[in-house]
Length: 282
Image (cartoon, rainbow, N blue to C red; front, side):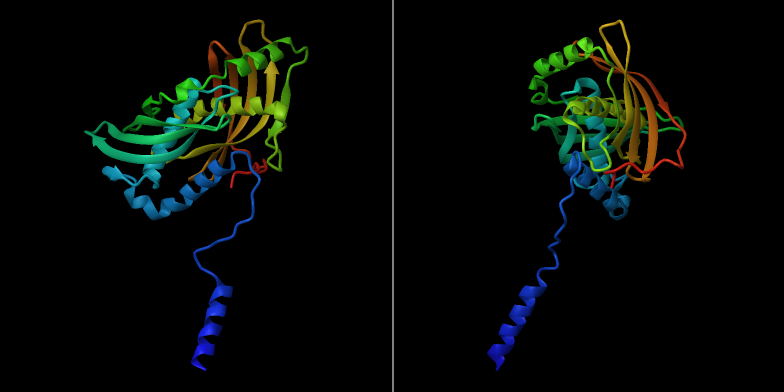
């Protein structure tokens, strides 16, 4: 009789399963792994809020180290990003924070950054400094990423540039991605260009209390120009992951292969209460 009871209990345990296993449906999103990682990071902030101003060695998976590392991502995009090179934070290996007298706070980081189009990863050493004071200043960043600098996209960039220069009609698009998270293949370079351009905003706006992600290109229009630089007007929606606010930015962006991406103008637009929440931000 005792043996039978053990067998029944074993069967019931097998049916119940391990409480640590969660089965989640597949989610079809652009840059899905990155978005899920960012969302998980926000949900963890309540648990680690007491560590935000911790000094010394940081937990690589907690909010302070991750947020500082995201600033490095934006900085790298402003230097090396293009319609065929977009960099994302892949992993934080280690982090250290210290107060610098009364002037601000400095983070030392060892991270891995991934170029999303070629799926190439490389390790980077970085230093991020946030100044302290009533007036907000952009974080100061120093970074060394030798492996990522070897990525060569000259052929793809030249071909895309010549295609746009010779095209008799100016490109335009809206809702990248659409409500299903889809982007047409020929529109992806415009999405990548927006990702790089938005890093200029996110770098400029980042503080120790923010975490930004580009949610959607509401619309983009190529502008006529007689110079070598191609110009685009973007309306971009940013998702501030901590406050959950959707922020609209209007950008004037120029690009050509020799000179890279430049943001000529950026304007933060008033909050739109009637605007629908863009897809794939959760």
